[in-house]
Image 1: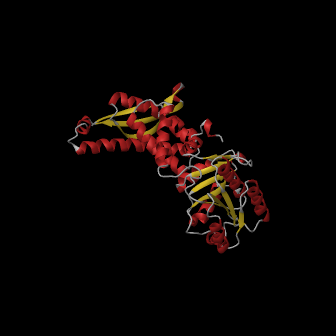
Image 2: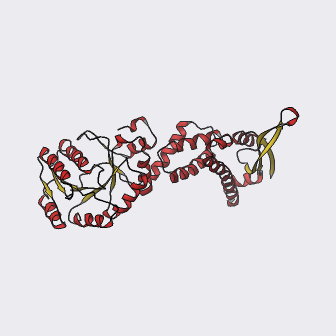
Image 3: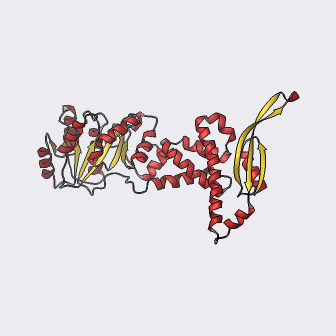
Length: 370
């Protein structure tokens, strides 16, 4: 193996010199920081990097030979070693973004900064860092921002495979909204009903199990009158089953549920038992307010997880400047989004969410604004 030492000012400079002198198949063996005396009588010291790199032409020859499995293994080991080097630099960058910025290759630095500026959970950023580094070493060329964006979109698309996005499919007769109090379930039901009636020409009916808030019942009754739709208030599982059977000939039955204190397990059990029916296909949306903390959203999800959640429905987008929670909940729980709302207007402030819409939000594209 041919081994050579490089003394450079930055890692980017070192990688460029290594590729130039030893070729793209060279691997980094060791790195360390050194001090170089400069100035009058050597009184000043400048920090530099000392990189030991090596290249074995025999290994390259074996790697190019499809009949030599050991050559492929050696070549893969080189890539793994190089990845560990750069990943080590990235870990240092996470600890201190400013101090370590100078030691990172420009392309890598730009990719990592791009990831940290996105609305993504930390665990996914770490996964994507590994993925992008592997792509970067494989391509071994100057990266354009458009290429980085392309790689990021490809990776995120792969993480969303199998997730259901989009609004009401009308394949299920019952549309149930669940979630804590104060997230806007009743107003959101009115928006969904308006879309069903005005846009899709459906006959709708309403059921509410929120018997704890008189104002909520009256609000839903007002909307029902506007749409010339029937409404039933249910106090028990028997009431609920009878109401569903009564409205069986309607296209869509919207179900508004009680919020109450989601931290009390008995409340969730009561809600689940009242609205449980096996005779009618049901689509269940967990309604979450974007003004809530991510930790609270996760706690809510864990409490409602036994109610067969199909998709998220996020409200109050207009009341927050950060959409970090959207990516956190989708990627963490592997659940898609049905709708997002950004105001109180019925039916205007409602947007159906496709996978493309969601990626626009995560990538912070201009078209992400509702």
